[in-house]
Length: 96
Image 1 (tube, rainbow, N blue to C red):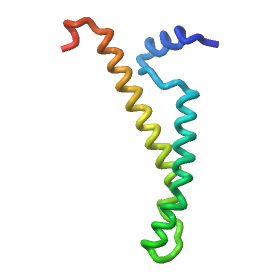
Image 2 (image 1 turned 30 degrees about the horizontal axis):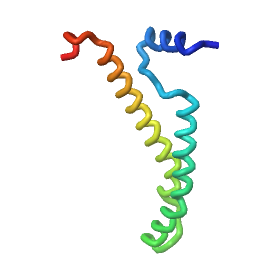
Image 3 (image 1 turned 90 degrees about the vertical axis):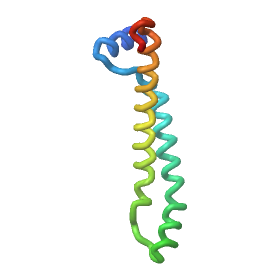
Image 4 (image 1 turned 90 degrees about the horizontal axis):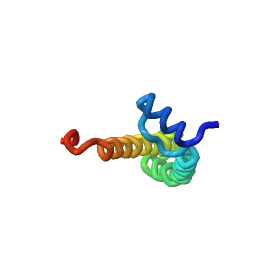
């Protein structure tokens, strides 16, 4: 539908920051979700030892937390890249 030049121009017109490609973003979020799921047994065991009984607690939110942390990291990295790119494109007298 759109090529990369059209997409970049559209983002620039809208004032959007440069983003990580959607495919890479989905892969990163899927990996973080799987990682969070793999942490559940260890967190549940630690919580069981701490409480002394089995219960459903915050350890079951680990997949959601890992995905949210990944989203925040991706947004921060995207923002930093966009700022660095803007700074590199500025004339030298405007940088200070």
